[in-house]
Picture: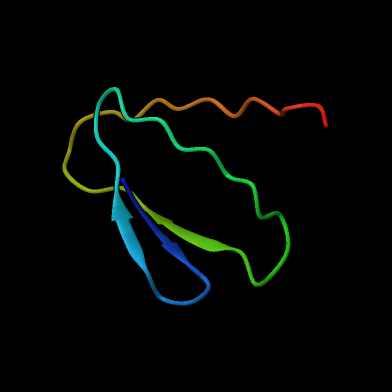
Length: 48
């Protein structure tokens, strides 16, 4: 899947990739699923 941040930067994530999101403010992001394979991801909140 591709993730586009509020400033227009795009990063592609594939099988086994991990992303740590620390900035929870701003305009948000866009998610685009690419290809025709199923995509499974998990969100795990971290405690301060």
